[in-house]
Amino acid sequence: MAIRINLAVMLAKRNAKSKDLAEYIGITEANLSLLKQGKVKGIRFDTLDAICRYLECQPGDILEHDAAVVTAD
Image (tube, rainbow, N blue to C red; front, side, top):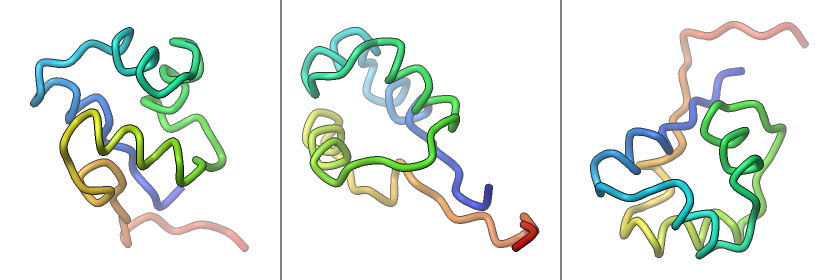
């Protein structure tokens, strides 16, 4: 996938724990782990908004487009 998820990086930069973030945004730690690993097909805007509020960052700090990745249509 051409979208990279840098959530683990942002958590480390903010010295935040996954457990606390999951509780704040109202998802399970397992689902947050899948998100951190990029193993999800999508993310709801309200979830992204809650993550950004908690980490005091912008969506672009978490999501990155990698143009070098070629995907088959």
